Length: 185
Ligand SMILES: [Zn+2]
Image (tube, rainbow, N blue to C red; front, side, top):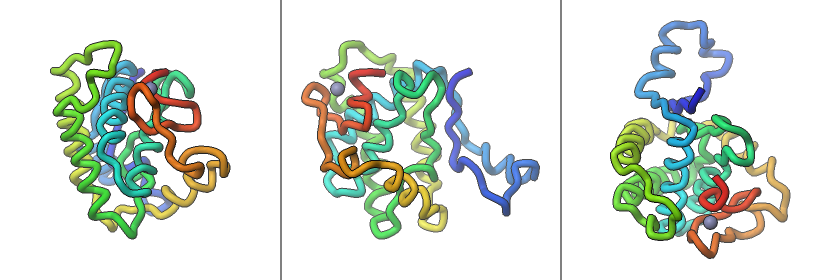
């Protein structure tokens, strides 16, 4: 068990997983962690991004990250693959720079003082290093427009990210459909 994060969840009909070359590319730089490790990674990304997001598309990214809540959806049931994030083609360059700042902010322990536990720094830094390598590979050409449109369609008008961007008063993190990921997972 555990959580595997890779660059792309799948390539569609043009890139069958049975194709060895695609599979090798699919898994390149992929990272594997325990379920608990994934919860910590999401915790510290939410804390950092809650303090750094400025634009609507950046806040959407952080709501998506906050939705990766194993307490709500089951152990191991998170999807942090890079091209599954709700990338907005209109703001790609600034949003990629933002995500790299979120990773760096997590490295600087942004918001960690609000946690009820102390993350293992050695593990946290290794997860952030690996996630950054995957994030750096993202290009505008890799954007799947449906990652944003389907994700938005899935939400009702009274749910984040469509009801404004409420935050957790304790963690200053953006709240997802099921509340604050840092509070619950
Ligand atoms: Zn919270």
